Amino acid sequence: MSTIIQHDENPKLMKGNEALAEASFRAGLKAYFGYPITPQSEILEYLTEQAPNHKDVIVLQAESEVASINMVYGAAGAGVRTMTTSSSPGISLMQEGISYIAAAELPCLIVNVQRGGPGLGTIQPSQGDYFQATKGGGHGDYHLIVLAPSSVQEMADFVFDGFRLAEEYRMPAMILSDGALGQMMEKVYLPKSGSLPKQEVEWATTGKPASRERNYITSLHMDPEKMELVNLHLQDKYRKLKQEVRCELINTNDADIILVAFGLTARICNKAMEAARAKGINVGVIRPITLYPFPYEIIASFADPMRMFLTVEMNAGQMVEDVRLAVNGKSSVYFKGRMGGMIPTPEEILLEIEALTEKQRTMSQSAGYL
Amino acid sequence: MSTTMNGTMEIVYEKPKTLTDNPTHYCPGCGHGVIHRVLMEVINEMGIAEQTVGVAPVGCSVFAYNYMNIDMQEAAHGRASAVATGVRRVLPDKFVFSYQGDGDLAAIGTGETIHTINRGENILMVFVNNGIYGMTGGQMAPTSLCGMITSTTPYGRDEHFIGHPLKITEMIAQLPGAYYVARHSVHTPAAVRKLKKAFKASFESQKEKKGTCFIEVVSNCPSGWKMNPLEANEWMEKNMFPYFPPGDIKLPATMK
Ligand SMILES: Cc1ncc(C[n+]2csc(CCOP(=O)(O)OP(=O)(O)O)c2C)c(N)n1
Ligand code: SF4
Ligand SMILES: [Mg+2]
Image (cartoon, rainbow over all chains, first blue to last red; front, side, top):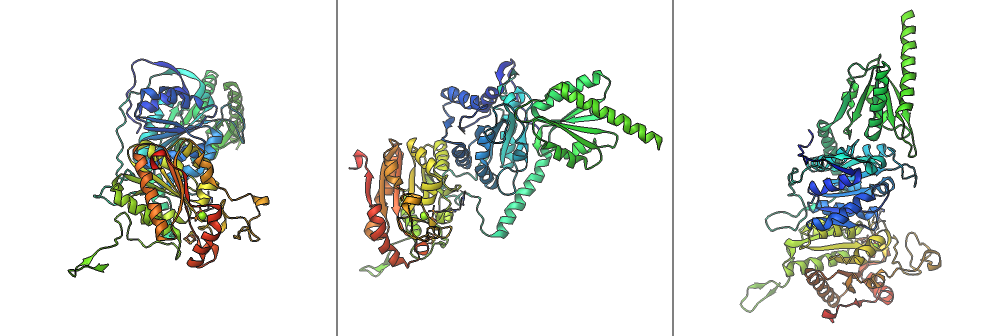
């Protein structure tokens, strides 16, 4: 499932953004287009600084995120491994282009180092773009492959996974990170160069030799019957993509309460879980790694009337809707969220867990009277 | 075809192999079809079809890739020059052109237009100025003339309310990245010959990576202007040419 990545023997201490940038060179990036925005500017800065050491890689600061994503469209259509990175407002601006890329079936990698919103919001971390990332984001019926790292190590590794999946399925992939993961420094074993094979691009526009028909990249199909066939083809691809679902399970088997969280909040949930277990409360954590495809079946397999789910996010409650879809009424699903750049603490999650434990106790007591 | 002295047929005109057999969807008398042909003839005659990638816009020429028998990409509305930048940067030894209408290049895509040229991207930008939004049914374009009646300026374009027609070609000629800037038309055989020369010179300079070549073609839109093709061309000469005069706007020393 995941890319077989070879890593350096020795670790480095790096910021998430820098680790991602270095990993992209090592993953065989050929063209990067981006525009400055906090908290992801280190990616563009790192790439421009290192560019002289990678003469075969185009690193270009575009005039806007609109331009960046359309440059990505052009480079991807010409058959090269290409990437853009931004943060929430910039990703909003790219949505039309992303929809075109999905429709034209071009592989590329888009990184969103999320910040709090809506609007100009804050430069502090957030997970407020979950809906936008996983449900399409732009116009029309389409999806992205969405990978949610929760460490600097995964910021680097998922560049490889993202490119591989994007190229295998010919669709855009997104790394949905946040400002904390982008800015934090951690030990990272960088992936080695050369572990990602070159993609096959017989469809690319590289100049038409006499020996083949012309290649053209388009998303336009005026005939609705043809357009529906294109839609059916895309939906078929999204169904196949389900085999790539990835999810981390920690202490879930004996858990009375399962925390569901992705990215940064999953790390905090792990701390809360440890604190709860120290108090004798059986808590587990499910961490979706692929947010699209979402691990519905895996979560459903833990749904049980005796078990409670607590979804923790840095937003007003977005992934919790998918958790509810997954458990389909078989368990109660609760939500704890912080917004606007605030990060939940393990202590406040523990308080929620204790309140739920109390609820479970009174419920089982009242059940005993029946 | 004409008959030669010994009675065999001599081919005097042939559709270049850079054009597909697909019939175009353009209205009778529309300039787009002629401009496509001129561009494809030049690419064919220069023998660069195998090394050329084109970028189509959103506008009436959105289907250019159905007619041009070369590798093509269809860009989002206004973004053709950004897409062409992406293509050209990763295929530095190929020939790349973008083809855009006035709404595409000079309204929604103004930012990309200016910055592509400011970076001196080694592409040819073909700018078809028909003073109107043809595709969406004849609304005002950034280049619609003062007083011009369109479906969104039913009382005529009032420049005090909505601004003057934009001379984007003169504007971008100021940028150091612009290597060769000219304005042409396709309404007479002589005009077609001049445009052909301009396209050829543009592709030749691309080999030497001199910067952006920008060729505006003042064209017509018989349907949007609600005229027959003859009236449209007369109206164009009488009204468009004084404001958008054909001729060289920025000529590199080597072309003087
Ligand atoms: C984002 C977006 N906005 C608006 C449109 C609708 N639209 C399609 S073509 C067009 C104008 C085309 O005019 P022009 O560029 O002058 O080309 P012409 O048809 O005249 O050749 C517009 C507004 C669109 N497709 N996408
Ligand atoms: S609407 Fe105008 S620009 Fe479009 S094809 Fe018809 S005449 Fe040409
Ligand atoms: Mg127009």
